[in-house]
Length: 249
Image 1 (cartoon, rainbow, N blue to C red):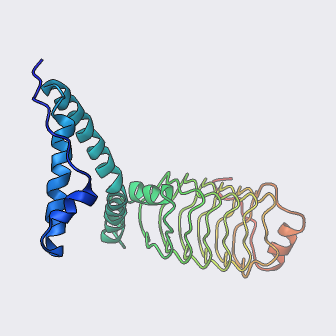
Image 2: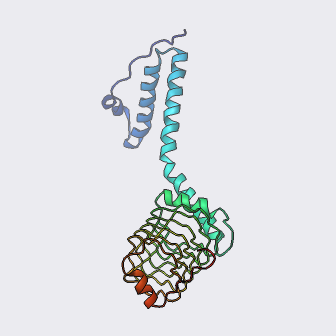
């Protein structure tokens, strides 16, 4: 192994900085002094050993750089997801919106005001999503998992929510006119102030649902509702709901 001749140990900085003839020269002398110490530290190292240490140092720098930039990468990913959602706004089909919505929700990004009207979103999984004032008008979300979502003031008119999981979802003051909720699970859902005119609730599971302050249920079909809370059926029929089994019953 090749050894370099040992260098003279540099003087302390308190001594070296005195060599600066002017105060503005101190930073330049400091850089030179640091390099002298680096050269001194490396002077007795074997060449291959130096390379090994430099390689380890490079990896460390790369790791630090990676994590320092992680925030920017997350922001870029979120920006791209929103771009996918907004570009496809008002159009049919998925257009990559299922993946984009799920990615944002997994990162706990609020989806307040998101517009997915008329979108094809079957099987969408957005548990615990903040969908305040969102627009799901005419969207197809059959078999979706939207449990614990906040749909306050949302537009779900004519949305297809057949067999969707809506357990404990908040529908306060939401509009679900003519929404298809056939076979949907609304266990523990809060329907306070919700408009359900013309909605299809056949075979929907209403166990422990908060229904007492529903705004309107006129012409909603409640045939075969499961686990209906005490008093719900009588109240609904008295307020214009209908009981027509139909072909799906």
